[in-house]
Image (cartoon, rainbow, N blue to C red):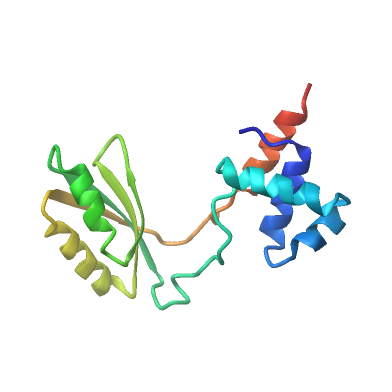
Length: 159
């Protein structure tokens, strides 16, 4: 779904001021509250907006180590292994991928020893052939979507 210039302005506000009320967003944007609510409902319905919860910091929760673990899976067991990953709380994301490995997981840990324990649990899952781990040293670009939203909005407003 393409977003237009007003959608882009709405999304920018949601990102930059997530705790503001719908009424205040409408006031800031100079649109009717009903218009704003209809836009928000449409973007939720079409999957542009996928959540409204707070962004949490694993580091502040005592898990400052971040690693990306590639998992190679026995052929035909991808779904089974994927389901098993959901039971590992230190896995905060998992994706099926192409290239080296079948799954890519984002894993957080208290320290390197804890990371090793998590990896050992992964290796023991039925269907896991091997893992390859890369430890993140420093975040260079934080997770962000605003530049993409703005680029899509600019493209949609061009004739």
